[in-house]
Length: 557
Image 1 (cartoon, helix red, strand yellow):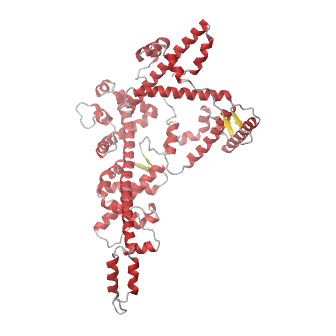
Image 2: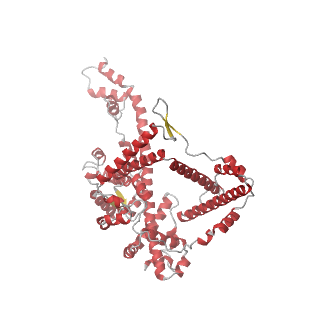
Image 3: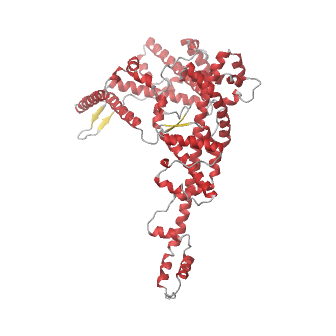
């Protein structure tokens, strides 16, 4: 199997350590290296994807085994059983190919944006220069008009003589611009942008075209664009330039920049062919941002349909909804929304009546006004008192703090080895945050996202009404928020010990460092809480119950 070539001592082409490297920056040199790794991974993925299909592993398990392969060095992988090593390597190739596709897609978007920004900057500069020249030429228009009343010009004089005198005042190539300006005709700014593309197309060939050839695009509901992408890639691999773009993909206002006369020479034909290729990159950039275009075998740029359940599960949705405890979703959407509307209306009226009657101590109506006055949910913590309290106790090193907490809780005994198999994620192949990020990333308004946003607003209103009406709920929420802010502040203090720098060479190591920071934070919080608990017991035994009230103002973090 080709996967074992990754760890073969005698094989140089598929060295695993080279494929483990990630793109450090979106620079031409780094992108070139990633393109090489992508070619190697694409060759290996032919067998890897087939094996993944047979094993029917969930995305969670694939990521887990890929992480194990990432953490093991080559010598350790060689020591594993052949079957186990094969699964590790296959999952690594599958995951690494997806990461590579993400990296190259992001490189494509950045390369296009960078080149387009340069073209736009050139266009704006040329428009600015043209405006300055035009301002100077317009001042000479009265002199041109005076030629018609100049007594030195006879009616018998040839018109060519008059034209030459006019061109001496206003250059011949500037006269159409002056005429358009006087006629209130807006100048065509796009001409300058296309001129920049014509003269700098070598950058496109060098930085953007290789990414198009490497990525495997797919379209949602646009077979014309998908077929054209396939045709262009096949043509560019064999004999550039790019073939003409399908007219159905071109906006009416852009067609004049993409057409030439049949009598044009080869240079003009090459120039227009380059424009057709650049126009395709423009379509790809727009479609990727709008979600109409996706990249196969990707993580961040997959088709939105890939995140959803397949047709077989959808046909049995009532069964799966019931198993997930979402049986209420099986009722007709109209009935459910009507019930939700009634619930919101009733709760809104109830809360409003309590506020109007003065029964809500948290929200009161300002006298002789419709303005509402809100009070604080909880008493803020006293940081000065906190520092004074803990100053009475001896400071301990973080090692001793961890030891003390371990003696109290024994948490170190509950650590499991990293080789413990991951729990199968079942059909939960995608996280909620991934779906929301995908929907929010679309530049155009997405109907699904708009519907979810409105649905979320309903529950947000219900929550705010409960928050305004329930004193205990307000206190619990506010205390949780304050506690969370205190913990985050402690974590930032721990991070600053390392110079506020990220630790780790890859996402896995950074996640590990973050977990360690969470562990140390929890140990410190537990240790401080242990001190406060001991002080409370001491006060109760000594009969100094008045001192306990100060503990309520001291956070353990």
